Image (cartoon, rainbow, N blue to C red; front, side, top):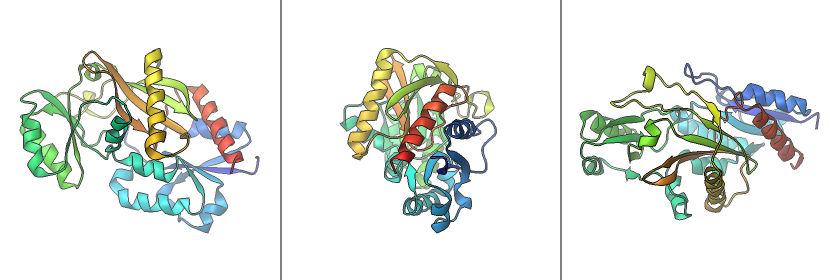
Length: 301
C-alpha cells in the first residue's frame, strides 16, 4: 500500500472565498494510511502513459473551472479513464454534470423542487408568465458555483435577459419558485462516503432578491449541523436512486442538497457526485472516512 499513489484532481484558479479546502485534509489523512497523494491540475496533465505511470487512482475533487471548459474537460476525463481508474467514475460524472438528471430521480420516487425546464426562446416568456410577479430562481442546468443563478421577479426584464443568456449559451433554463426556507438559509448538505452518512453542513442563504449574492459575492458559510432522522433517510433514498438510475455501484462520495419545506415536504435541490465541496475542514472525521474509503478502493484495484 505504501507504494500506491493517488492523484487528487483539482484546478489552479479559484474565486475569492470559494477556494478548495478539501484537498489538504484528504492528502494528510491518506498519508496517515500510507497512501501517497498529490494534487493534479487536470488541464496541466497530458493524458497517456505518463498519467498511468504516475498514479494508481484519480479522485475528482475540485476541477471547478469545468463549465468554462466543458468539452475539454469531458474529453480529458474520458481519456484519463483509459489509463487509470477515476472516482467517481466518468460515466456517473457525465450523468451528473447536467441537472436534467433530476427528472430521472423523480422517476425513481425522489421529491424535487418544482421545476420548469426551458429549452428554447419560445418557451421562456410563457414559463415566466406562469409565475406572475412572484420571485423565481433562474439558473442553467449545467453550472458550478451558482454562476448565472439569480433570484428575480418573474415579470422583470432581468429575468428575461438571464433566461435568454442561458439559452444563448446552449444551456437549458431551470425555472423554480422561490422556496422561503431556502431564502431563510435552511438548506442542508447531507454527505455520504462509500454509502454511509458521515456529516451534514448548512451553508446559509446565497442569493439576494433582485440578483446577485447576499453580501455582493459568492460566499458560503459552512457550519456543521445535525440532520434529522428523516432528512438522513431522504439522503440515503437519493443515493439509492442514483445507483438505480445510473446502474452504478455505490459512489465513493456524494453530497445531497435538501431543504425541508412547509409546502413541499423535504425535497432534493441537487445531488453532487462530481466535485462537491465536502467541507472536510469543518468535519475532520469525514476526511479520515474518505481516506479509508479511497484506500479500500485502491486495494481492490
